[in-house]
Image (tube, rainbow, N blue to C red; front, side, top):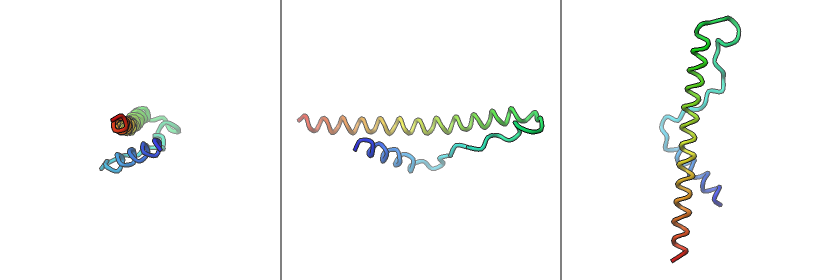
Length: 81
């Protein structure tokens, strides 16, 4: 039951996001093949972008876990009365 609620909270948080980006699964071009001075810079930009996207997802998961814990504590407080 708790896992289901956590899943629903996370989906609700994702639905609230207006410009949620997906991670770029395609690696940067330019690292393989012809030697290019732009290759390492492009790879760094690709990595930084994916890192930012991942951090945003992790923040949403932490928020969902926190909200779930708050709901548990509220429900626990009601049963103790």
